Length: 86
Image (cartoon, rainbow, N blue to C red; front, side, top):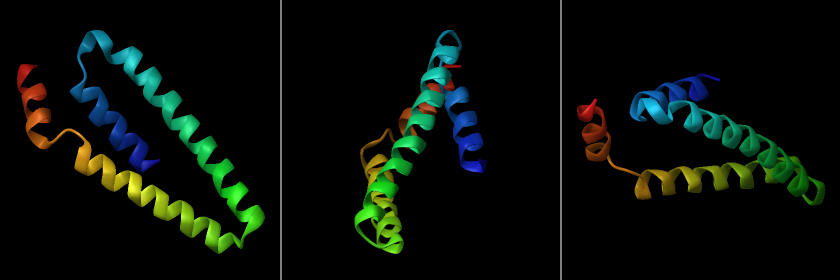
């Protein structure tokens, strides 16, 4: 929940006022769908393997997605430009 709150504050502070409501709706829907799909993935993997293996595979997948987001995502200079326009 702490991650969700911090990320929510960051998204709200970066986005333009006219689009904030729409973006937050999309953000919350995406967050909820991600949790549901992640649970389905863990259950599917653990059905065929041990629970530890399923959780380790899903944790590794989460780590890969997080690293991809950091490497490919917008850098600090883009965020600074967005905040300076406000």
